Image (cartoon, rainbow, N blue to C red; front, side, top):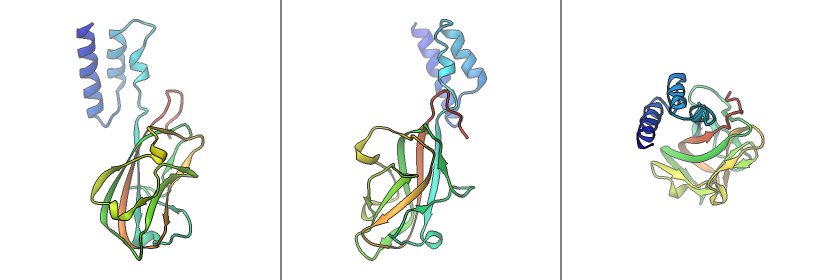
Length: 175
């Protein structure tokens, strides 16, 4: 059993080295290690993903009036799929974020809070941000575009890249 575990661990490490995705070959190798009923390799699928969104003051302005849809690296309107289970949110302050007061920023997927309002004074380079209400995971009931909500005061400058790590169930298609 120890040998099977070590082989499984090596296969998972090699699979995660390729952007967190398993290949059909890895999946088959894992399945061959376990009894027919388990099909462990089929459960370790291409369900882990990271969605990025960029808030840029020079593009989006800094108004605290409404939610601001943020763009991805290569496409606009980044959307998390229905059924996505968000496990981590990371923020990278690319350009110093400033405001005329004590501004806060909150990340949402559609109408679902992914983070609580975070004071911009706490942004410093790259860091993880706690999920909303100190949750360990957030499951989306419907698809939602990444949005930021600025509150307390308008932003006057800055650029923030968000990284949202999420999983999909085996039977949920990843767009």
